[in-house]
Length: 235
Image 1 (cartoon, rainbow, N blue to C red):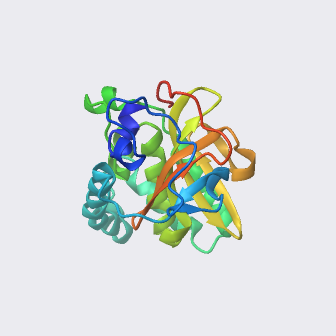
Image 2 (cartoon, helix red, strand yellow):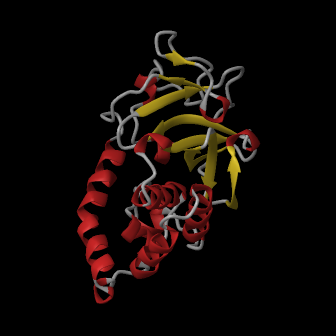
């Protein structure tokens, strides 16, 4: 848990002391509260990204990679990075395909990579990888979500319809990360633990801590009950 949440000033954001145990908050301040939404949680009004330095960092590194994506699109011989040519070819094939089919294909493509922890990959407790890093080394749960997020942005999905979501998995008592995609009044959950994309109503065991895209972040709280103390981190 602590590695995924370390990039966020969570105790301050939730009004907790630095020494207190972290758990899903039962409520948020009323002036921040919005109606139940993502995965059935209450969420705050949109906030800035200053509390998420790791997310800001990976967004900057993704922007630095984009010239490599463009060169590969223009010239096959320039697709030297691991997986890059196959990824760009997939995105070209998905152009004009119905959105739900794009979402499903992107989820399956990223899930082909085997899980690998940040400690094994980078000798760090937490590292948020770009698509090129993910395809070269694989990654952990948020790296799959980032790969899917960038893929769908490349396919033209609006920023406002995408969120990387850090959740408590109530079944396994672990912290996990998934991608949420809004399409035609439905929110789909893309998960490295499942090749099938599910509507959020069928994913009741995930309780969000926070969600984020390139524009905003949102804090979340359980509408009726809080999750118990978090345990270890999920794949």
